Image 1: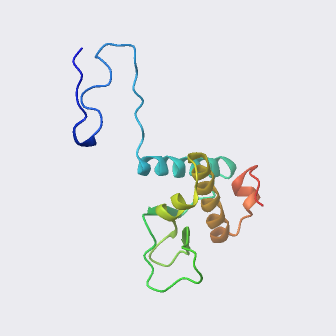
Image 2: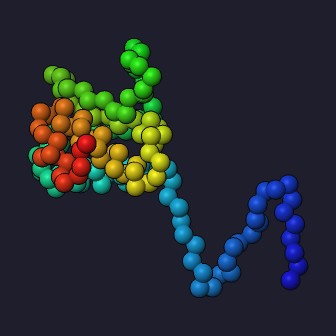
Length: 139
């Protein structure tokens, strides 16, 4: 079998498995898709605990916070909760990059997204964290 050179350290070239072979290659989800999946799971869990918790509340994602004023301290906010006005419904915005930066594993990212959503929802609606968050340990 002829050996191919790895020119310019560009990595492997060509297919890794022959068509029809029993080898399966796992498709890795993108960073954005995994974050969206974490938020979808967190919303589903909140709705399973309290079906009316997100009524008249819009949940969104932004890459980074775009604030006109400086926030206090050295910490970047993970999320923001905006109360309803006459023209707009209440909103919860999760900031994707700061949350990802604080999580060291995919499991911790999923937990942090859930915690952040529940904390903002509790602040916005006045409901207790225990009612919205389920059985999770809130130390």
